[in-house]
Image 1: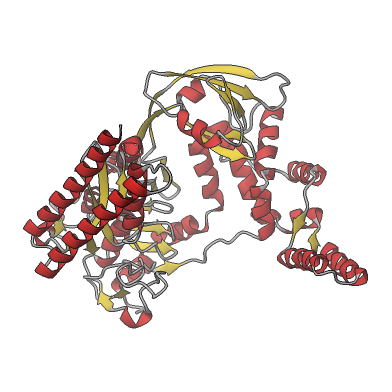
Image 2 (image 1 turned 90 degrees about the vertical axis):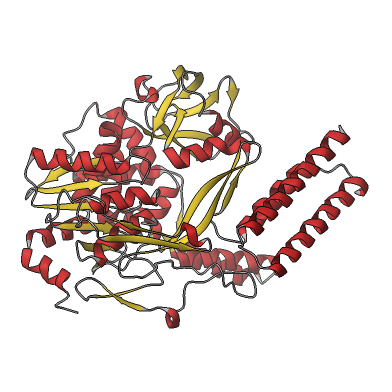
Length: 558
């Protein structure tokens, strides 16, 4: 066994040395680097050999090398990742958005697993599972705090394979058992699209996977055939990005053939590439608004940034994430993969919107955003000023919606989720999404529900007072002082009833959305969100005012 293990370690280092030689062949390193690299491999090999032979306890050397590899890559950036053989399914999900499963979203609640979402027409949906169902056993294994993460993984598996679930449901005393056949589940690229009032098209794009641009193109053509569009809203909020080519293809639907959309530049010069529009646009004159927020990243920023630089769309929302780094995936030995950052991308004005400089770390190893002193000014096609160094700045900036601490606590303690489960089983049906609105009496029922729950909500000041009381007790202050602090803490506690009334306008849309999801799935939830969406309302106003739209893109106000 020891000989086999030693031979495996030796093989690993042979691969490392071959890799180093390959890099030398590409002339990426200079001669000094070659020597230092070879020396480092030799030293590392010697250290591993000494530990393996003489360390007092048995050592899982391959595991340690795997952890060292992970740590090594983490020192580069968060996007350069090694996928060992046992994580190849995660790699496939990342690149294709497809996996074998039941079609439900799951979250942890204390020592249990709750179903939060059911995908329409999925195996979970066909079997009768509902949001709010608690999974108490999987394949005969009861769920506990110790095995909860492992059981979550077991919900996925080969399409066609069976999984046995034991479910505890609200309002039912006895648990029920479900036998579900897994299928290939694909994350929806476009979870919602429709023609809104004023003949405005709306497409929400979740990610940029293979074939996303074809789905987008088909959906846009369908909307335009359904009703001649006067404008289009592309919603890229919460879209983390994906494949660069898919972003290029989507931009090409709206810009002239030959337009530069994005270029990539890195250390391997032969890999540098300019991506231009290869086809004539299908919708060259259709007015566009793109919605972005702080979680719009990568390919989302290529689309929004290119359309902004080419003065082809008005961008509305919050500054985007600022990921201007390009990754490729490469096969390495033993059925493993590495996703590695190879280039930065530059949009038509010439700017790179990468917000964090991973190559220049602080002395303590921390990283920071590109400093203002290094931010440069660029110009769009019409001469509007734009800047690099920190994501896409919207043409129309809207404040980010920030929830109160009280509402966050309601969400964290599942008050809204649990009430919605209760509501679903007490109401067989609700009106259509457009017609459904929680009335005052229903909201009062929610207030009574929360009041009965044994939960105390603390303000920020109340939390500080609580910690102060604990410190005073630990340091043996006089009892009179401790009592006064606790009285102050009590006064600073949030009165649940008053807070539920005070934050009603903030809580109500979240509560309504959670209830609608139980009846009309994810599409219904999105449609309900649109009723309260300030960014969407602003987009409608801009697209309905042609003068304002053209004024923004012309840069007259700059």
